[in-house]
Image (cartoon, rainbow, N blue to C red):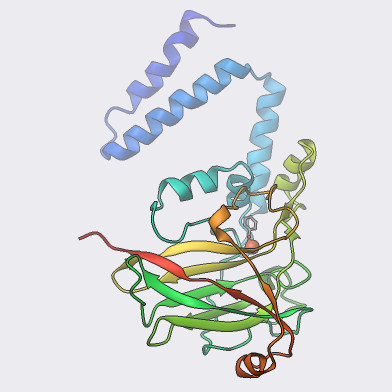
Length: 287
Ligand code: BEZ
Ligand code: FE
């Protein structure tokens, strides 16, 4: 039922924010109020539906632990994370994509060429490339934080009793020509966690929980804006239906079947191997 009361309610709440000292906080809260009220007016939830919504958000919070962030997951499956990420990214350089909930531990420092797959996954591969500034200048000393799931689709933090801490993770420093290279196993698609409220949401909406195969990166270098991104394995299942909407065409890379015994020896991998080569391009900080 719409009454004079409900008509004036929105402006009364917005008005109550007028003494908020921080103008940005005032702007955010006022817009949130208007959008929330518009949503309620449009959908007219019943009291039971409202209680269900509060119960869902409560359960989402209660599912969060030191190693699990169900609210980030909720933001991811609703496409909000990608919206925020993309609004805050540059049109130039390597495109960004979601951080995800599993960058929650410090990656171990590793030498260039090290293997981040500590348990010997199915398909060995080499990932190599350069970190460049937007004009193509190499960035020596650029730092790459890398993390991926194992070939069963789990991150080390999800299986502390099964995987050694740091499995699938590495912190690398590019060489004097901005080059990086490391060994790992070809990642596989995996489902995001579905044993919490976000899983209930996916089931209720008939959505699958899979992410296409990918490796995460945060690339940073002095004087440049860091980029948080992934590379996706070309040909992977679910590239066109990522559960968290994070695929951007430019981030899909070939993991090329390579039969080259001397290159395999150089990288310390069995021949043949898969090889992903790509450059990460960072934008100089605007002065
Ligand atoms: C991930 O790729 O680690 C991830 C991203 C968003 C939600 C769940 C997992
Ligand atoms: Fe991931």
